[in-house]
Every structure is written in C-alpha cells, then in structure tokens.
Image: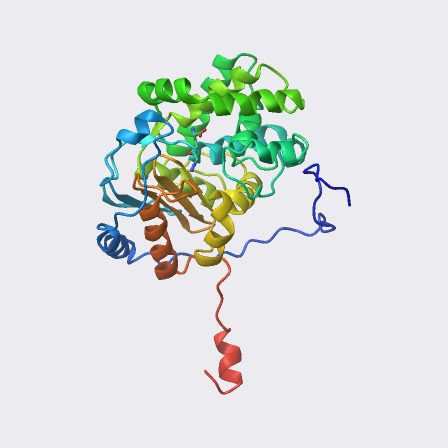
Length: 348
Ligand code: DON
C-alpha cells in the first residue's frame, strides 16, 4: 500500500455478474402527518447552533424558521411549518449535480476522477486536497463538488449552468430560480473556493478554467428551494430516479444507488459516521440550514432551520429527521428477528 493515498484505492468487488436485487420494504405512511407535527412541536424551541456568517447574507437569516416536509414515493407530500419559505440550496445541490454527472459519464469515470471516500475533514478543506495528491476524494465536499460541476455537459459555462438548473428543476418538479443576492454575496466572499479550484487545476483535476467551474458551482449553491422541494428532490432519488410527483424519469435507478452511497459516506461531512450510526439513512446538508434525508424505496424528508452545528449541519433539521427516522423505522441497518423463526423457537 502506498501512502499518502492517491484516492483511488477501493474494496474488492468481484460480484459484477450477480443480479442486483432490491429489498427496501415499504413505508407505513398512515401516520406521516401526525409524526411530522410531533417532531416539529418537539424541537421548535431548541435554540442551539449558529448562523453561517462566512457567506455574509446567510448571517441575516431568521433563526426561528423551521420546516419539515416528507415526500412518499407514492407521490403524496406532507408538510409542517415554514415549508414554502425559499432558501438557497447550498451544498445539497452537490448530491443532485453528482447524480446528473454520473448519469452522463457513468459511475467508473466519475469514481476515478472524484472518488467516494470521506475526507474526514471540513467541507471547505484545502488540506484534504493536498494530503491526497490533488484527488478531491468525494463529491460532497467543496473540492469534489467543484470538480464534479465541471463535468456537467456544456461547452460554455452558461450552457453548463443551464444544464445544472434544468437538472435540479427536474428533481424538484418545478422551475428553480437563482437567488441573485445570495449569488452576489457568495461570489464576493468565496476566495477559499477559488483557491481550491486553482489547486485542483494545478493537479490537473480540472480541465478548463477553474474560476469558471467555481462560478457555476456558486450559482448551483444559490438556487432557491423550499423544504417541500427538498423532500420531492430526495424522494426522486428514493424512487429509482423517477420524480414521484411529476412522474418524470430524471436519472437511472443505478445512479440513485451510487449517489446515495456517496452521500452516506460524507453527506454530513466529518459527522457522517455519527449520523449513520444514530440515524441510519443517507442525508445531505447545506449551510443555509437545509437537510434532505433519503429512505430508499420509501421517501425523503426535507427539513430546514438556519442555525448550524460546528460541522455546518442544521441542528433542528438533524433532530427532526432523527426523530422521524426512528418513529417511521427508516434506519437501513435496523432489523428485528423474523417472527416465524421466533415462533418456531417458542419465543414468539
Ligand atoms: O461553497 C460553500 O462553502 C457553500 N456554498 C456551500 C457549503 C455548504 O453548504 C456546506 N454545508 N453544510
């Protein structure tokens, strides 16, 4: 084994010829509204966390906004709180842009260029790039996301941006619009992302103009969404790539599977391990306070509350999703003994 890693090592995978079966169960959804209200009421008064001041305009957000929405793969969307309030999607865009890029280029090309392993470092880390010989390691951190955005089809930045917006709008099932004020604020304060872009270019991980890639990335972060949108966008990944509300196929089912695996490794950055341990479903956060969590084959929860923890993840959104994951049995790692076996053993 060579150290430092070049980011391309992987686990043995000698099972390509085995047919992929899907076993996800279904969501017991009769009580979704009740459970959403319960979670909203329970965490409304939590006032931990800080606003993301490093993007100046995000420091002016209303810390009391709180929304939880859930979209079922059957097409119903449930909401409580400020679910129609628009906020910039920020890092949550990374997950959907990654899916579009994997759809376009195929999983192996993107895995080789970007990687799928957790960096163990903050989302805007320069050191993570240096420690890995310029390999971005993961599409959910800024370095990997900037390099991923560059892979969106389009000969010009304008065309790439158009494709990003159209793709994310298809996930949402409505035309998403740019928040000009957020885009301006972030463009004036994103020296670190520009440095990351140039560093990637120096390692030839970006082919074109690194500042153009950072600009499209900054625009994608500035797209406005609601918690309702996040739930529908996430549910499209939970539904094998078909938007459950519009019925439109956005990406292939295999792309959803690969995207959710990458999100599981670092959707909540250096807290991703703790998140999987406690909550057990892939989730992606953004510094404006949104989180979307996906239960494959069942649905997705979009939650929004601006104050963040130290890793940049919304405090109340984490609590609400954690509550719902437990109450609805969404944890992918949880199981219970098969009843018939218990009965046979006289323990049923
Ligand atoms: O590039 C940035 O720093 C922001 N536009 C996005 C970061 C972000 O959302 C991290 N998420 N928790």
